[in-house]
Length: 225
Image (cartoon, rainbow, N blue to C red; front, top):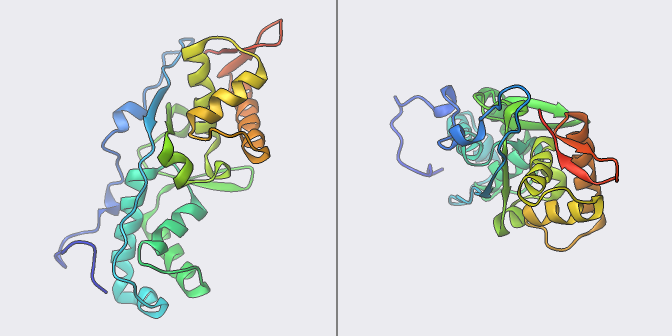
């Protein structure tokens, strides 16, 4: 197997320091009682694909570090990322489809990298170790977001951020308008049942965490976390 870039055997793999170059924009906790600033950025998707190899070659012990490198590179670009999407992104970067052998080798690589795992409602999302889910303020949208991930693969924190971004930039609104606005911010211009269900769950999460509040007339406003 040819690695994505020439690497020295003595060079330690990057999993020892999982950081995001733009992280200073992501981790901006507000002072208690103050309104945080939610930030909209374009989604960046990992697209590297090397020469296709066989599942047996992929699972060979000698290739473990290269798989770990890919996991780290994906995390540094796409975290927070749903765990199954991380698995899929990793083995597809080697031109491989899903199989028991491939999944087992990928799971071992993720375990070795040790991302921060945040499990909500039975779904695990992988974060960089320096990221704090409760302080995450980014919402990643645009055409790449729609193409890179299904709405069901977006973590609750980012769904909340999309909702709060709309309220922050456009003011109070009713639920139907909020659902449409948040889905558009995430890159989904056509409302479907799956998108509506996911964004509605994001509204409930935002209410639960105090990020939004409901006014006496039934409209939603940005809250103070």
